[in-house]
Length: 200
Figure 1 (cartoon, rainbow, N blue to C red):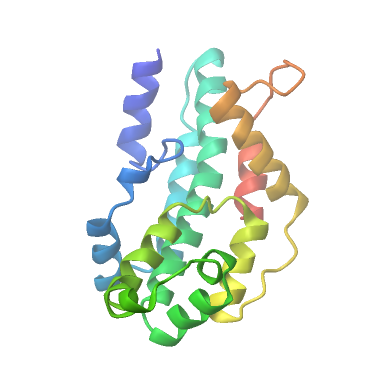
Figure 2: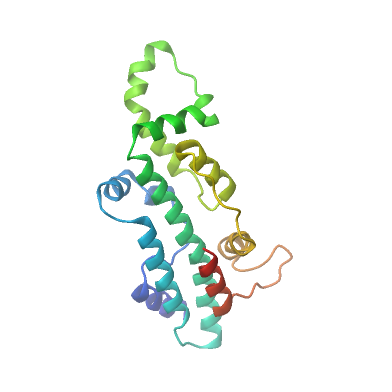
């Protein structure tokens, strides 16, 4: 049953899986993203349309519960991907953005550099910034907002409760197989998926 659902999801969209590993988001991908004309917002919208289409697939009651659980989590994954892709694409468009991010970020403020290493480290700054960004979990919206503020002076809007709850639920789906902290089963149907999609 799971294999059948995975095949159906794969036919609709290749972007339904959970949290990527660090090595999935490598420098080749970043280079392709930055150099391509890919629009992170259009990619997000396409993903959300694919998720809605997949959520309407007819299957058994048990299969539908599993499918909807995965798709609900994927709405948050699509949001994470958008925030990360847009950040990298925008950051790479101006040296000033990189300078502001490095200057205002505690991680870089606290990094010690010997004077004898300064020229070598300067050559490596782009790679160090990318490595720092790759480690960030974009569903941590408070910290993500701080990164956008530091680099671009952009202030995130207030996060809707639907999205905040969706991030919590995604954690339960990915790390507890859909169980809440008290051990009960969460329920994510078509209505919940569409509400989260609209909020995103």
